[in-house]
Image 1 (cartoon, one colour):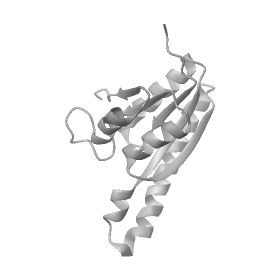
Image 2 (cartoon, helix red, strand yellow):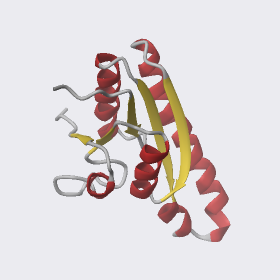
Image 3 (tube, helix red, strand yellow):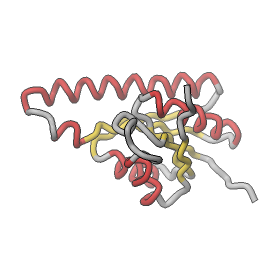
Length: 147
């Protein structure tokens, strides 16, 4: 029996590693005639770890990066005729992805295995690993193919 996916959540940080996860999430939404949800999380650790004098500038830069990442998801979804909602949250990325999946009744979460902070990580990025462990819905981890 095939799963019934009505809502596909894709977590994006705008990195090249996550671009394939966005493509897979949009393709999944097309195949199941589902809605897409795109989430960008302003990482609280980045903000809290920065000097107070530059915190507002960093927040603005991260917000701008998030806007660009979500615009890319909107564009890619529109090309395939997939309705998409976008959200920016602030906090710890894995916790925010899991909370957003629960709050939006996502049926599946798609995420890259290595994002902005994880290019050097082994196997699965730490955020993706935490989402896999904590989410109450299936999590599709998408590995970046070699260039």
